[in-house]
Length: 274
Image 1 (cartoon, helix red, strand yellow):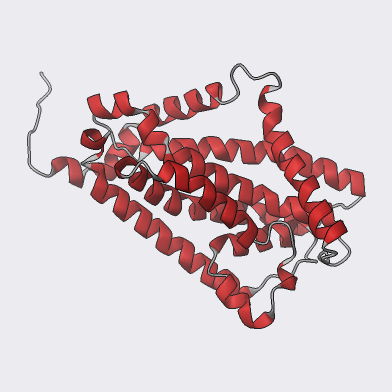
Image 2 (cartoon, one colour; image 1 turned 90 degrees about the vertical axis):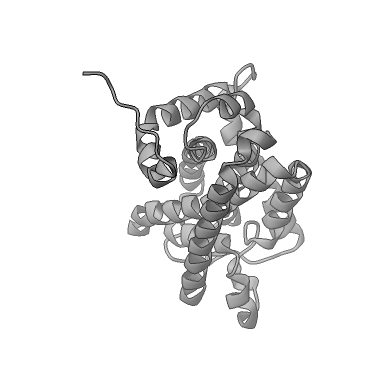
């Protein structure tokens, strides 16, 4: 029996989320391709995923601990506290930077073949997540170096890792869509990432924020993610600010809704604009 092709208005829209599953092999191919070429023709290859956060940790430790004399959390080594913040931030910044150009970089594929375009930026975020997992090697080496072993809280790291992923998806989809229409965003995104690095508690402890401003400061969802990572890694010496966690989760959920909604509304014009 021959296959029957059904032509029906709006069918593709109604089956969009089912198509994401049907095109899962394309997702695997794109993610593997990006992962394979990420460090191709580099001298030290995947070691860049270890060196970049390590160098950032060294600079922040010198500037904020040695020069600015800011306190650490409890008796945890300052370098370890900083690295616990660098882990989720590096994932977030890489997701934002790489996903923003993902559609433009796949111009030929998008302009010729139908598939749910959501696959492309999500695949790049997954590749950034692999770098994030590789960076954990340095974390364990630092813990061994300082003799600072974790406790049962480390088992909750996956919870905050999932939150980091969700917090990255919303802004990444939104900026990806804008970058297709307004190519100026390729110049704005590095500034946004750099600015976000200094307004997030990456190089310093959340405890230095005045108490009356902590809730407002927590509107940045990465604040809650970073605090959560430090709470898990530093044996609870970095306190969880529960009102901020609730606000951060709500803001992350809002950005996911906004990012997907804007991406879906813009998706039908991607092929023409690219």
